[in-house]
Length: 448
Image 1 (tube, rainbow, N blue to C red):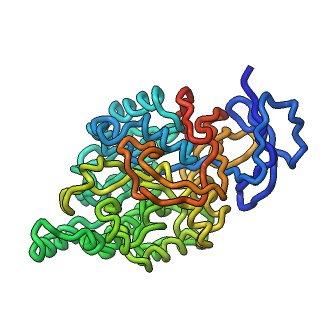
Image 2 (image 1 turned 60 degrees about the vertical axis):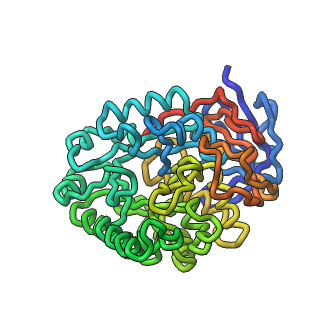
Image 3 (image 1 turned 60 degrees about the horizontal axis):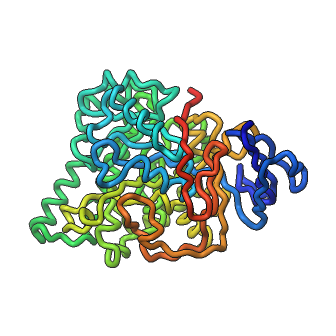
């Protein structure tokens, strides 16, 4: 017999409303949702009193880098998925820039096999595109693979796709969602050369957003939009970082009708360029964190539906690697454990409503990728849930960081809210500071 759990009296944040409801979990699924007292507690093996707390659908992060295989000194699927469930993230989609890169169907399957063994959260992995693997890309099965990743900017080694014929082939022939990293390489190289003339190898980190500039982002993003419109491709542009880029996207049609969508990341919603003075290379990301005006414009685009989803681009490096000088310090940082609580900080500031957090970090990701039976608190759906206390202050320290790298751009920051419990497929995966290591996630499937 599978165990049943009644979550009693939580304020459910779901599908545009906040309502006090009871939720009955049976096995992997949500069996019943009812007003307080409607569900008999005798139907459950366990009752969790959740009055005063908020229950969200588990977050679905559509952009993470868990570094396995080949870069496991930085992170592993096991460690980072544990950090994910501690942060209320119940499903993730991981990128192909590992070692070896996931550029063949066999290498892609190796990652799925590993996740089945060790992942605490549900998982999917992007197929990688390069300048010469279009045949492999076109073999990808959209029923059980989230999409195809194209690096239109050399953020991560030699996966840059800069061959125009290859790009035309991908956009014209690939039926799957094409997720792109957009920064124009020529513009960045010219900016780097200019700053090297001025500073040599000692370029101050504050110039990162001028080297990887707004112009570089817009030039690449607008080209991707043009290619998608030309070929009718399904394009998803990742980590929008500039105000100007938000103008590329529509908000006059429903998400289900969009062929071109956009993502905002936690760091571009929270940080601005004033943080370089205190955080240094710890907030070095590609695309760069830019001005406060850019940050506000991204928040506005999230609210008015030009930007469709929120993710992390969780991309750990060791503290030693991040402590190098500007050109040697890699871009990226760990965020998956702190994504929901950061969004709740924006809620406390009055910048984003709770309902929008559920929409952009759960509902819309499920809609956009056509994920089966996830992303909503609905009867018959998988019980991927996270229970949060909006008034439970805590401070990020090395002792409570679960990412393998052991540091966070939020080191020393005191959050106002805390994740208390997380369920993955009906199993309690995180409970008040403890990850339950016996829980395993499932491979995401897609209704395509």
